[in-house]
Image 1 (cartoon, rainbow, N blue to C red):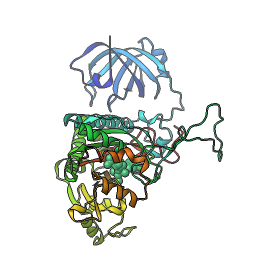
Image 2 (image 1 turned 180 degrees about the horizontal axis):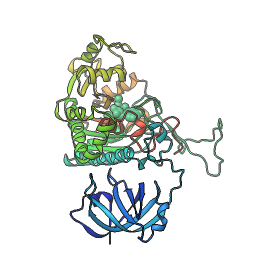
Image 3 (image 1 turned 90 degrees about the vertical axis):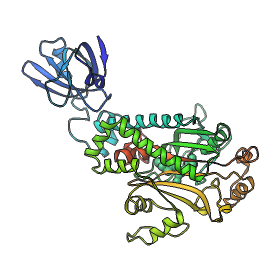
Image 4 (image 1 turned 90 degrees about the horizontal axis):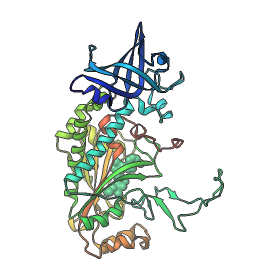
Length: 462
Ligand code: 4AD
Ligand code: MG
């Protein structure tokens, strides 16, 4: 007897005599003398149909094979006479592994995303969320393949840090509860700092990736990052995953080339590897999904300086909630206007005002524009900002002056500054928000639905 996943069973090369399928019952239909069961194990979108005769061993437990129950079925894989599937299981024996009583929350009907968020422990058993999970996994695999194929090294940067990469004060503080201390009650502060120092959850692995780029030339991180601000929108989570390549000897234009190539490659890989799952979203979630994705893969992205983007926005017919001037941080409404309405494709905006960007971005003074830094954002339809990145300031004196301008205490960054004393070199990198990429490829409009257990206000219980 061999164990088969539903996916392998549905792709079998020929009939198989003795197989076992384990999974969860999606539906059951009883007829006179036999029952039909639809079994799903998450290996693919489709279910495997099993037919079980009433005289088969274990049939007396058929009532327990209700929607949601975990079961094992052994039998013969035979050609299916039914439409829409190649193979079905002619079952010989049913074993109930775990029952699911009538109050199983996923009965056979369409549930709203809001409801499913309240049962985040069960939603991966629905078609939509199992599809998202598989797409997420494929996109992660495609990420590693992309960088590995191009000679990048995958590095792991710390989650707990003493620095604030983005300088925006959006950090969660790490504290320790001394052992044997009762859990704090509301308003009670029993917390100590991290062994006597202030420590935060990282907002970005970039500062720690830079030393590795200045040693191994091309590196990337792929890990969780945390932001304590702005989490009550459909595009922001307090905990999200970021992919951050960092490259020595790259300038801004090479950085933009890589960002474009990576985005195209990721979307293309997912379209390829997850075709069946993506089709579900193209059919039920966003009718414009396929054209949008094909456009991303096949058309060159638009690139324009921030100053030109501001001019376009100022002369737009559309009225924005926030007016735009040089020095304005672009809002999602502006970003979406540029990508969705004006250019109708992904747009890379570069050379942002220094006044709205962090200290580490390289000043464009030697290109005759000391008011801007070599920053870039990739804006995509329906999402807005997917990638943020820059060339880094490699000149010690300019970096120190920028840190003073940003009123930063330079002491904790001594090691970062030292990189500019010992073998400094031009370098650049960017960060891609992994959940936003998943929203883009699925058409899902809420970030809470592309991560297993979203960490946003009101979502902490599990
Ligand atoms: O633009 P950000 O803040 O850039 C950085 O953190 C740089 N240090 C990256 C680098 O150069 N290595 O964030 C990068 C991306 C954004 O473009 C967005 O896609 C995503 O991270 N992002 C979020 N995604 C979900 N929830 C949030 N709260 C996010 N904040 C940023
Ligand atoms: Mg940004």
